[in-house]
Image (cartoon, rainbow, N blue to C red; front, side, top):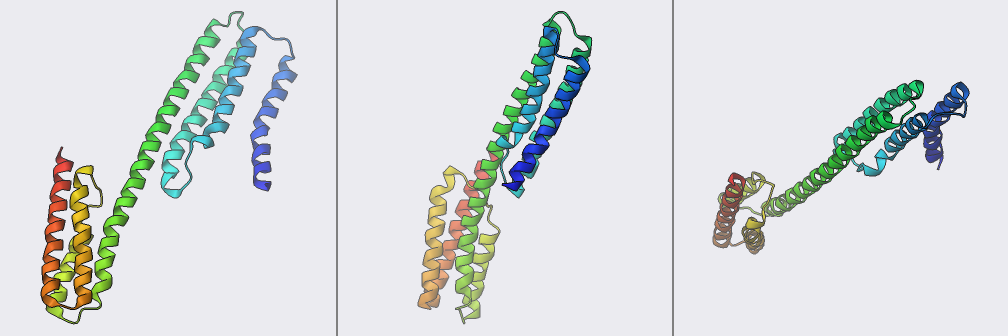
Length: 227
């Protein structure tokens, strides 16, 4: 609550200061071009204040949000300078103030919305990559947790190779690899079950299946990357 109050006070500082100077220096009687520029300056400041609404929270999205803030600040200060110039000039016609400031606002809105869409796509891609990373790492953790239960060093080495191969797997995925990934998951479950059964022959056979499943998945991922 206190934080929101402080943010509101900070946000009002410019509006109060700008309006005090505007009315004290120029009074209340102005031509249409001055009122138009007055409105554009306020619109630019409101656009800056609205920027947080389009930003995502999180450390990994800081850079994405920073670009929106920088563009908002650049537009605000640019509009402030241009608006003040037109206010001082007090042109009889609103044509040039409307064209210049309207075009500036339109460019800002288009670029800002394009950045929001691009940021959303980037964040979705980052989330997808995290999910895919978790899926592969969870399979590796399953194998790792079972390796401690194996007394036979020779057989254990084969399981360790499976674990290393899983860790080295590409974390990204493609729809074409879903069947191969399902087969890999089943092969890992089969390997874990074989380890629990403590039958070396079954473990070796299951380890080979995991290796082949990894190779199949990696081949599909490689082919998808090359397209």
